[in-house]
Length: 284
Ligand SMILES: [Zn+2]
Image (cartoon, rainbow, N blue to C red; front, top):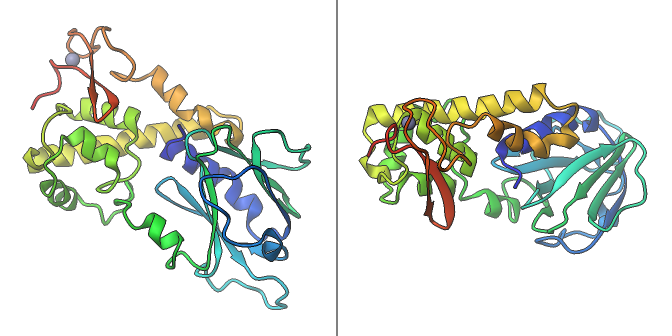
């Protein structure tokens, strides 16, 4: 499943080349998770603005075309909200071959074709009149803080966790306190911070919450570095978590020896997801 680092690496790959691109055609394949919400023809002539990311969503501002003026007045108008779902990936193709059976959205522009390939079709491309209006605002409403947002201070993180009684691992995965802590990143950050995944979120002390936030940032930053350094281009972004897993301390290592304490890494199921942890290194 594409996680936040994959989505951010993708954004970095397409944002610069697509900024200012003019939409020439929109092609839809099989239905995705939600309908586009606008006739595809209505997008033709629009100009792509600065692409941003919120959680695992990408926002492509679309400025109406036809205006003679130089539109640099912000990106608060209409646009497309994209989500990669379980299996989606985006590619920006200079010469787009005919769409394959899993290519379900093409944004054809004068800078190339942005193509969504999504075999399982849990992904989405949804038009919204603005980021602050439905449907975009509705889809983004429950998202927690961005992991690198300076507003998310250690005390703010601790306060948010105080309101939750669920196990810390489940709270991280829920994404409504902080986004980006997908399963592999949540497991690795909890190991790094020495926190047992079953510990109740509201039982974390202030110092431990601060350690966990730092560990989450460090873990995601390493994944982003990996995405930026080891991949030839963003179309391979789906491999970031796979590459990251190769150096994971606990994720996917059930039964293996903990490199820190020499104990045995364990796997348990929490909220229907596999949790990997070291009972010797991670305390309640
Ligand atoms: Zn250990």
